[in-house]
Image: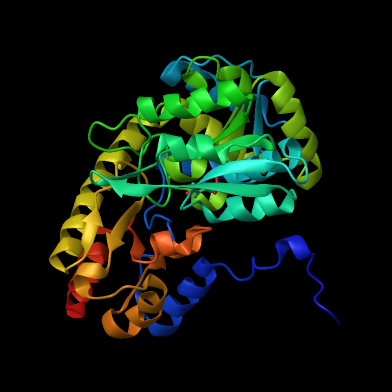
Length: 387
Ligand SMILES: *Cc1c(COP(=O)(O)O)cnc(C)c1O
C-alpha cells in the first residue's frame, strides 16, 4: 500500500517526546524531557473527581461543558484579570488546551490562510495549523538580556494579506519567557492594524516566577473582541493527565470554535470537569504554594546546570529551562540528546525540534524542573560527568 497518511500530516511522525521517553525507559536514564510533574495535585480536588464518579457524573455532560465549570472559569477570568465573560455564551470546555487550540485553528483559518506563531513553538501548533491546511509564519524568539524575545519589526514583517490568526503562548513553552506588557502591546498593535484574530495559550498562567506577571492579551485595548483565550487545569493543578481545558472569547468566536469542537469530541469527561470547577474556586492557595516550589526547583536546576558547564537561561515561568550546550564544546543538541543517556544517564529535549528554522535552536536543550528535588539533584550530578 502507498503511504496512507494524508499529505498535509506527513513529517509529523513519532514526536520527540515519545522517542526520548522510550530512550529513558530503555536506558534507565532520568527523564527531564517531558513536562509532567511527579507529584499529585491538591488532595481535595482528587477527592472531588472520585466523588463525582461515585455520585453518578458518568453520562454525557452538556457539549459546551458543565455549567459549574463554565461559571468557575468566568469567575476566575473576572477575579484575576478583570475580564468579563458570560458563562452561558462566552466560555466552553475542551479536551485540554490542546483541543482548544486545535479547534480554534480548524475553525478560524481557511486552507491557505497564514498563522503567525512564535518559534520555538509547542509541538501541537505546527501539526494543527497543518491539519487546517493553513500556513505557518514563524517569528523567532532569540536570547536577549537573559531571556528569549522577538524583534517587533520581524513580527510586523511576518504579517501578510493572507494572515488571519496569530497564536500567542505566554508564559512560553519551551523558552520560559513571560511576555511583558510592552511585548504584548506590540502584538496587539499588529492584531488591531491587520484585523487579526489572536489565539492565546495560557496554560502556565499561574506558574510565573520572581516579579514576572502574566497579562492576558485579551485585557489589552481592542483585544477582547478578537481574542480566543485558552487554558486548562493540567499545569495549574498538576493533573496533566486530566485533559480538561477551556476557551473564553466573545460569543461569535465561541460559536465558531465550538462548531468544530463538537464534532471532534462532542463533550469533555464529566467527573474531571466537576473537580476542575472545585479547584478553580478553592485551590488557588495550593497553586501559590506550587508556584513557589517550582521557583525553587527552577533555581536548583539552573544552579546545577551551570555547575555542570551549561549556560542556562533562568525562565520567568513554565516548567522548563533552556541550556546552551556550546560552553561544553557541543554544537548540535539533537546529536547530544541521543548520546546523553549513555554519557550522563539523563534525557532532555533538543529545542531545535520546535522550529521551522532549526539552526536557530540547534545549540539548546530543554530540561524540565517539575520534578522532585532528589531527582533534580541526581540529574545535575550525573550531568557534571559531561565535562
Ligand atoms: C502542556 C501544554 C499544553 C497542553 O495542555 P492540555 O491541557 O494538557 O491539553 C498546551 N500548551 C502548552 C504550551 C503546554 O505546555
